[in-house]
Structures are given as C-alpha cells and as structure tokens.
Length: 70
View 1 (cartoon, helix red, strand yellow):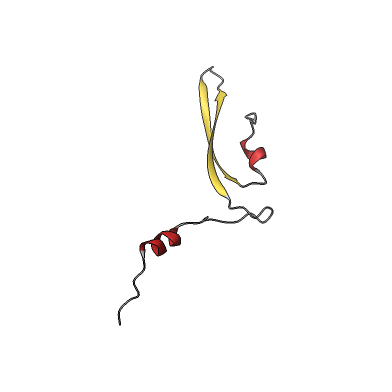
View 2: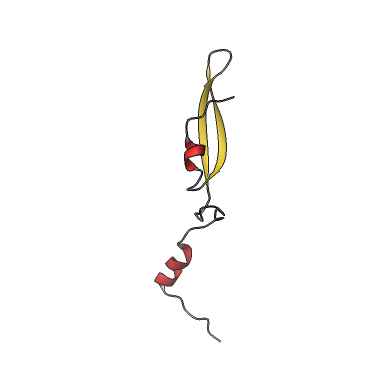
C-alpha cells in the first residue's frame, strides 16, 4: 500500500508553533534565556557570570531586571 503524500504546506505547518513547557500561572511557553552579568573581581578586573534562566510572561520583569551580584 502506498503512503499518503504530504504537501509542502503540510510539512511546514507541522514544524510551526510554540514548543516547550507552558507556565501554569500565565499559560505562555517557557523559554530558556542565557543572561550574562558583569561584575568587578577583587583584583579589579571585570568578570562575567553566565546563567541559564527559564522566563515566561509572568516572571520576565523579575528575571531580566538589573540585579546586583552577591
């Protein structure tokens, strides 16, 4: 038996749309974002901290705001 042929638009529509977990609070898709924050080391040089943070609509302002390094 022959397989059903898919059209080009069927192939494209299969790959589009949001992927990932949905936030239980706001219902938006949670995205992972890499945040790089600079800080001054004890010897006076600049260093960087890299963080991977999960961000959605309800916590974007808290996560992406300028926070001091502790």
